[in-house]
Figure 1 (cartoon, rainbow, N blue to C red):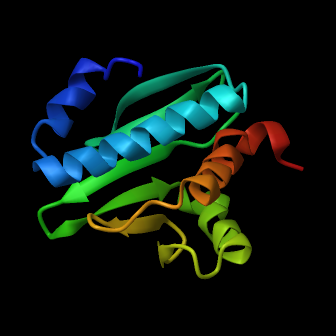
Figure 2: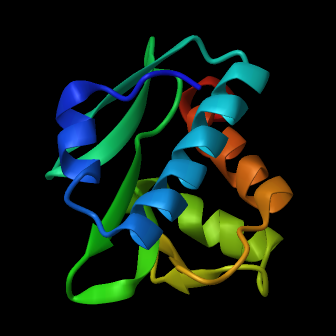
Length: 133
């Protein structure tokens, strides 16, 4: 697996071990999907204080990961709400994920991540601008 960017790792280190493990699983799936989709280099950085994954060149939409003390039993994957990506994911997978309006998918720390379906969602996000019609 690719080494975590230092400023992102600093954020990860503040998460409790179960949340960090789930976030690392999500991170790995993003990077694996990016490679499979041939989107080029992924920039791992912070946006709004959250680990974020951007394509370079900008052919995809930013994916952010988050955990919060306000909801310590879950982690979230955030998408830019103006892209309507989450609405599209909901249309494709209406019962697979727990959605938050048009901006996020949430996972409890104990649930198994549906990797095939989530990878498909990541592929749509990571190729958003390349495939926009």
